[in-house]
Image (cartoon, rainbow, N blue to C red):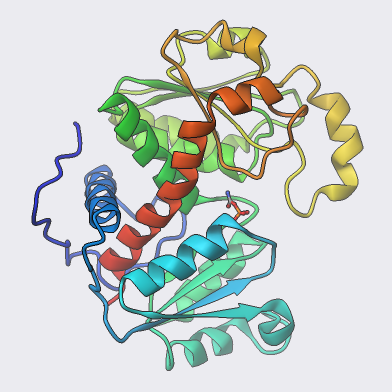
Length: 321
Ligand code: CP
C-alpha cells in the first residue's frame, strides 16, 4: 500500500517504550506505520517545518565500530526532534568490560531517554535492552542492521510507490544486511533472494525465520549461489562490502571467494528494465559494485543514505517517551 502523506500525521503512541533490536519486535502493520511516519518527517524536514516532537529529552549514542551515516544521521535526527544527543566511545564505556552490561544499562537509563548502540554482538544489545528502562535502538551489530533496512524500504516505497509484490535481490556476503533485508522484505510482502557463494550464505535459522514471515505475507525468501538467476525479475538489486567491519583480515580471501558476485552492468542486464541498485555504503568500487553501476544509480543510493535520517527519526519519535 503506498504511503499516504497528509498535512497532519498523528505520531503513534502504542510503540512508546519499546526497543528496536531486529524487526521482529514489530508487526508488519507497525512497520508500515514507521514508514508512513518517516515519509511525513521527511516532508517536514524538506519544508523546514519544525517538528520538535521530543523537546528536552536526551539520547546517548554508543559506537564500538566506525560510522559516517549512522553517527551523523542519528545526531542530526536527535536535534531535529528537539532532543540532546551525545556520543559515548568504547574507551569511555567499554561495554561489558568496565562494569556489567546490566549496570551500564541501568545507569544510562537514569540520565537519558533512549540509547542507540553500534557494536559487535547482538546479544550485548539484547542484554542492554533487558536491563534498560528506556528504549535501546540497534545501530548495527554483526547480525542485524534494522535502521538501515527501514531506510531501504522507505527508498523502495518512494521509488516504486509500493513494496508488496516487488522482488529484491541481494548480491554478496550473507551478513547483517542480508539478515535484516530478508526479515524486512518478508514483513512487507516483498520477495527476496540472497545470492552468495557457498560458505558465505546467511545463517539458516534466520533464513527459516524470514521464510516463515514471508509466507504469512504472501512473499518468498530464497538463497542461491547463482547471481544471474537470482537477479532475474528483480526490481531492486542490493549489495554491501565483501568484508564487513571486524573482518579486515579476511579481505583478500574474500576478494577471491566473491569475485563473481559483483553488481555490474552484465549482472544488471538480468534484472527488470526499471530496476534500481541500492547500497548501504560505504562502497568499495571495483569489488562488490562497479564504478559504472554505482555512479549510474548514485541519485537513488544517496537518497537511500538520506533516508537513514528520516527512518531513524520515525523510530525515535515512535518509541521514546
Ligand atoms: N550504512 C551504514 O551504516 O553506514 P555507516 O557505517 O557509515 O554508519
